[in-house]
Length: 250
Image (cartoon, rainbow, N blue to C red; front, side):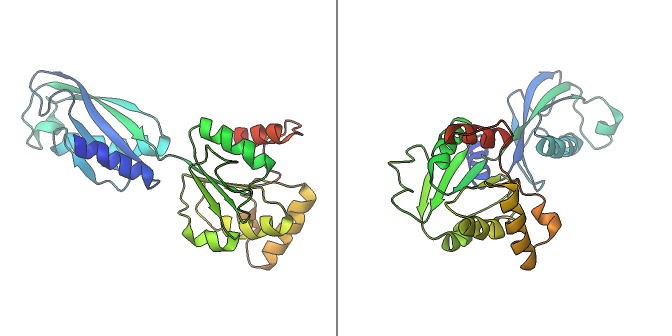
């Protein structure tokens, strides 16, 4: 059992997802007792067992839906059915199996360490994100200003990109101190696998930045996935209000 929970920790830390199947109720003769568990990884491989044969095959199929939909399912199996006995499972009882999604911890990458980022970091941490703050100014990107951040990187933006592991559980917020840096980060971010990319700025800024990036070969379709102006329109004015609007959209 310990191996399963260790694997769950590893999977989440690497930004992947899985499903955990647990036998929660049995009646009669069943291949596994209550409490038995099986972990189904996103690639279909498994760890542990809840009975083998057709039973596990069906649970694995359902687990893929659980992972995709991020919603648990309660499955009931009658082991006296013909489709079971034909596969050699001679048990004659019933089993209820709960299949729960194991979701990757979402990672929030905040490019820029100004006033808005200060508030975003606090809200994101309360919402359960792993928070990474990135800025090329060490006097802004430090633990004194961002005590709740999981990681702080004080380095030129262009040197950071290759060091970050971006996947579908990643969210990128671009709020640097100027258009030049925003555009530099966006050029990289829009090509990543991030689930969300948002950039602060006006619609006029959006047109200018998008035009520049299209001239560099980035498609219009790809750029249309970027949230800019970033955040929900709640008429935010203060850094705190802007942070709320951004995290509400995320």
